[in-house]
Amino acid sequence: MKHTFHKSIKWSTGIAVITLVLAAIFSVTSTLMLSGVSWGMGMVIVLIIVLIGVLFDIIGVASTAANEVPFHAMASEKVPGSRHAILITRNADRVSNFCNDVIGDISGIISGTASAAVIIELTMTLGHGEGTLFERTISILFTGIIAALTVGGKAFGKSYAIHHATAIIFQVGRLLYFFEEKLKIRLFGTSSKRGKRRN
Image (cartoon, rainbow, N blue to C red; front, side, top):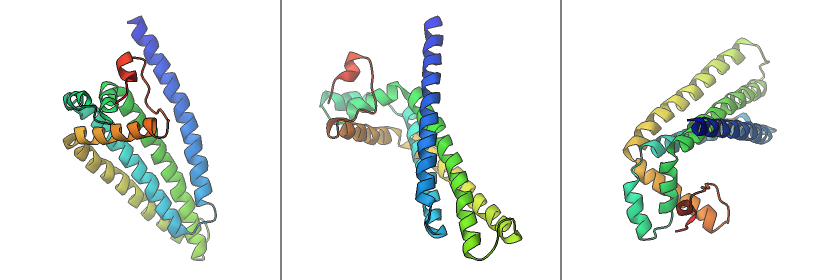
């Protein structure tokens, strides 16, 4: 019990630090990307941020719903990505926490901030100042659209993830395999000997 508590504290602290770093990176990157661009391009950037949040939400849900058994059969045949898929399903709680809570929440916050910047750029381009009725109207409409796309996208994503969980996690496993084997970048580590074996 005590070991589990300390393990949970260690994980929580680590994920908090990772969230802080990623939030800073996302914020700086989005600010740089929005700097000097038109409001139209700004809207595209905001939609990309929303899409990232939805995509990671799908992965997070799929990790908890995926069936591990098919991956063992693939691993016995040395199918690339199968062992990574096994690791994902065995660590579904952490994968879900990272994808849904960390990336998902950061995407939501950054998309909101980016939306505000786009609205200001749009009102200035159309010759309307900040605080005007036009600016407030555009702010309400654009914020509503982004919120609808985010919630609607995640609702669709959750349903899709539940029904295609195994296939989704296998593709994520293949991606992790590519990063590890081809680019020599390990994004998913484990301390177990089995987990360290490669496809």
